[in-house]
Length: 249
Ligand SMILES: Nc1ncnc2c1ncn2[C@@H]1O[C@H](COP(=O)(O)OP(=O)(O)OP(=O)(O)O)[C@@H](O)[C@H]1O
Image 1: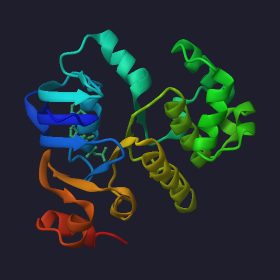
Image 2 (image 1 turned 180 degrees about the vertical axis):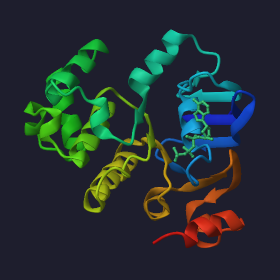
Image 3 (image 1 turned 90 degrees about the horizontal axis):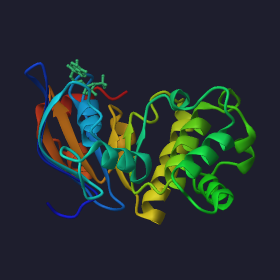
């Protein structure tokens, strides 16, 4: 293993004996963005969830280290600590992670206190600034913010808790196009300014081309192509990648 923030070797995930994700090698270093692309059912989400030990009823083999934690052998408590602070999951529907009757500021304050963060007010203010959200939004309830704002709040929460790694599963596909750019812009800044490592699952190759350094292309659970995003997207060597690119609007 190499000291990357995310490292996987010979990762294989099966359900009921059927291999749904087979990833020989995946590395994401500080400040890097790696994207996993592929059509629906190709195994992208399963790969991402398995990196945090979040797959249910799956058989998993291989080696996975995230922020130095050996995910497949770690004790439940070490995994909870990893997921609670250093490695954050950002999902497709930003509102789903928020509690409808709790103001955003209350939710963030509780999470920070639970994790023993000091200087709570200051940390909250700086995290909101980092995702370009007005601090006034902390007084609002989830239904009073847009999808793009809710997604940036989810990222702010991760930052406030000290995330070094963000694993994002289709983070912009529930948002309209103008708002997608804001969320992507925030992720790009956080990579550059804080050295955040980003693993992005997306079927949106246009989005991937604007943010990813490297790309893994999955089909039927297998990685059919991988390499620098500029090369893979400009001159795909696998027919399936060419098909994905041709399907772009
Ligand atoms: N809990 C589960 N039990 C059994 N099979 C599962 C489970 N989760 C996923 N699968 C199967 O694993 C395969 C890969 O699913 P996965 O969600 O990883 O694909 P994906 O590429 O992320 O697709 P999508 O973009 O639609 O989410 C699919 O055939 C799916 O039906």
